[in-house]
Length: 145
Length: 116
Image (cartoon, rainbow over the protein chains, first blue to last red):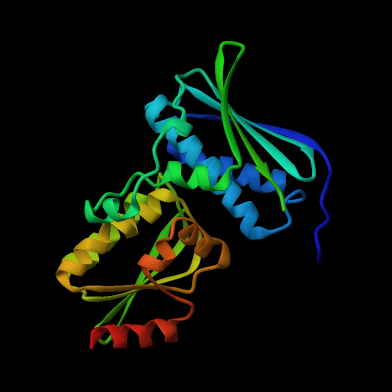
């Protein structure tokens, strides 16, 4: 059965900062966007990008402290665009300033990390940082095909 | 939840991955591959047909073994990926660096060719 696109909607979800909560976040995005993003591959890559950003925030800004929280807002202003806002009480790590890594070097050094930021930058069309109500907000925009 | 099933066909070790690999579970994949290598496997097929999701943490595990496998002359081939999972490897170009086949049969054929 062919799914039909919905037009506009807002969603939000909050988790405690532990990696085991990433699955719930992914399931939430899947359930929220299934009527907006028709392509399974496209939806999957969007979920991947948000998962990576949440993971980075949880590990590096919150040190996996479950007493800290991370909130995701999904805004669908029109059928062609989705805005994701990750909001928390922690410092800003601007991935736009993070230089792209060379995968060949990572392989040579047998490293496991370093791929997440590159994935997010490849998947999202725009990444910006703002401050709201004393919290930092990472806003990511993605055009939908 | 992430699960692994191992089977052996002659000198080929087949590892089936069931579930999702993310930052909280990638360590299990790492430990499983390390154990397989410690036990002396030299031809490893990774069955990804029941792999539903992989994040950069999982990609990183596979990536981290590329050099070691080259040094030890081990062959690892991944096969049976769903389109959405394959796309994750594709985004970073890892689909061209790792050995990835569509089917079990193709993976075995490639394994034979690489073993010569």
